[in-house]
Image 1 (cartoon, rainbow, N blue to C red):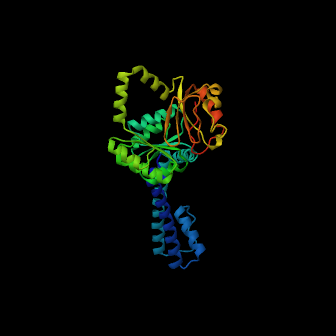
Image 2 (image 1 turned 90 degrees about the vertical axis):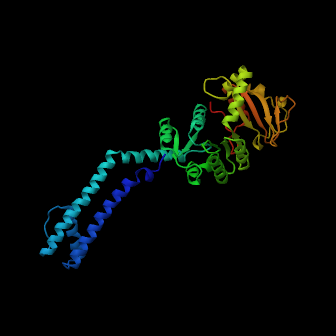
Image 3 (image 1 turned 60 degrees about the vertical axis):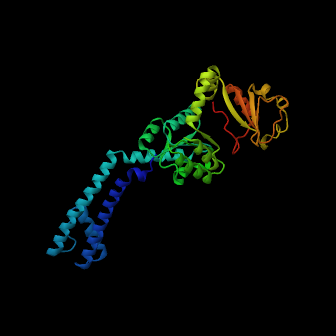
Length: 353
């Protein structure tokens, strides 16, 4: 989305120029009648107004030849200025300027209401796929891209969009990065993704930043810059191709629970924090999460980074654990209602399915 000033700045400047011309003629006329004809300010203002308005009321006081010539010129200049303003105003109406102002204000209101959303920087092939997955998962997000053609395509898909350079703070702030919970840097250049991550982490240190990288060197630099996760389409694509060749059924199953909308099972992350102290320190068998919800806990990521795949019933739930669970949409809703009675800042998203 472009701002009103960016999209219609020239037209607004032209309307303002016309008004300034009219105001200048008014001051010129008043000054003439006061200085040359020695009229009062009230008479001078009245004469100037009826002259510029061409209402034909006639002279207030008799005028000499030079003042009549000046008045004639003032009338012509007033007609030119008035016609210029009318022409600009008609053009504004014909181009839908005022309707567009209203639409953009409503659009800006949508952005202002965003909270706990994601920011997708770059709408190339990777960014478009990210946006499609967010739409499928019903996740609130805003897109930032510098290319006007991509912005038009995104607006046609009813995405919330901001046209601008995602590496600049002003556009990240326009996307309400302080209220966002995640950012995907999917720009074409590794350097741009690096700058975007650095800017995002500076503006919101708590935001989860995921970046696209083309090379292994860029992966390391992005991680050092603060990216929480870095994905290389080439490396990941190669691994998935190999996996699809060697373990096709496994890949079909994993793809089915990770992407798209037409599937029965989902993977979800649920964090255990201080608000859920009733479960901290208890084992999985004591918590009875599987019995209560039907969802299966596949793995647990400890706060120190340790991964526990296939936890047993004796595995304890500790503060800061992230449970990686699988189940149907209804089972995951039940699990979230058990562990996430209240959404808190920094907690991972409950399923919106």
